[in-house]
Length: 100
Image 1 (cartoon, rainbow, N blue to C red):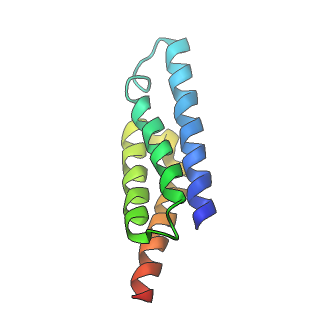
Image 2: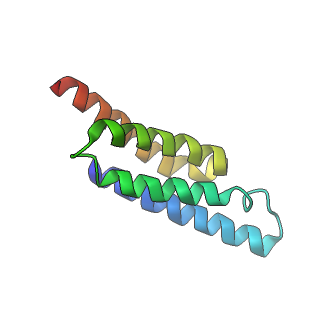
């Protein structure tokens, strides 16, 4: 699940960056103004993917939070990265609760 969270975070960062660039080119700042929140979500997802094995509870909750904020920021554009990070976060929390 570490790699799924990492790929989801990188993909979310790239999708947010592309949405930001198209908003500047198109002069439509609907996605551009809040696109930075999507980029922040992608960065936090990448960082939390490195802590999946060390701190699984914190990492799981951060992955779930980043998927929610990414969908809030970019709506349908962030669905694939959000699904990947949400599945990784739920699996990480579920795996930790089974081992306890």
